[in-house]
Length: 91
Image 1 (cartoon, helix red, strand yellow):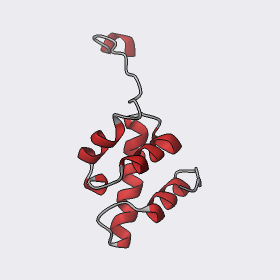
Image 2: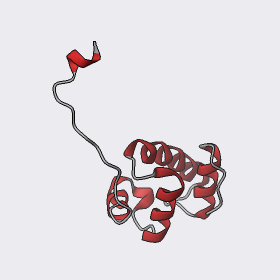
Image 3: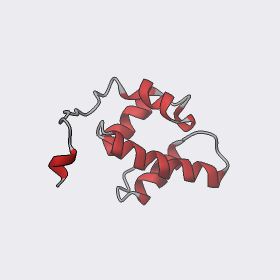
Image 4: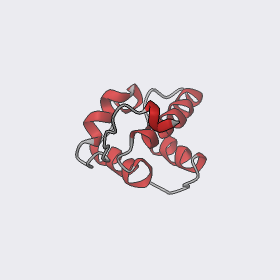
């Protein structure tokens, strides 16, 4: 049934590490001024170049930012987001 609804298959590849910072800065305001190395580290720990994973991380981190009254991500927000997402990895 799914096959009959797929017009054409399109291959997706993970984003390269050097593509992540610029893309994420435009993706959500919490990343607007984030350091490139920090964004690459989030990608390595959780995002893996996959927008689906970045969307989950962003939703979690944006909620934490809002709860804490912070306009942007910081180390504490990142570590808490990773913990909530099941990683618990320290940045």
